[in-house]
Image 1 (tube, rainbow, N blue to C red):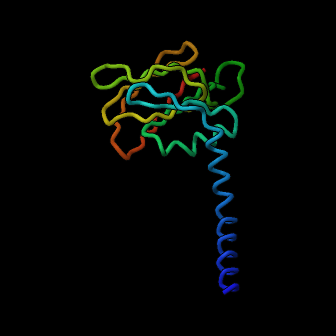
Image 2 (cartoon, one colour; image 1 turned 180 degrees about the horizontal axis):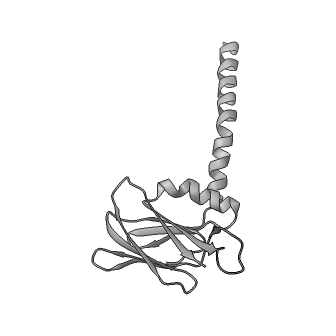
Length: 156
């Protein structure tokens, strides 16, 4: 009887040891995520500054119906610049999401290069503007159980 109990206890300890790194990783990601904001039927988080928060946002993206990514491209072909172009993530992007009827669902300024939102099913227009550059607009349709990813990029 003691051998059976000892075997079961050993198996439990080994299982817990194997699961612990996964739980620790999930806990670390949860602590790195910004607090969500809820507006009506929509909720969102924005951030991604720093490696921990950036990785946490990427890992959490699939749990949200809409993922927005913001970047700025530098034109290195400009006079006096080195050849080629590069892209860097950008923050402080003004974001406005409206539904099919034109009602504003989310109106915020991103706190990092990622904005993750859970929206009710429907058609949406997403408008984003950064650093005084002209606003960019994209349309998307959200359906339960799906994930949409929109990337907004501006030239320097």
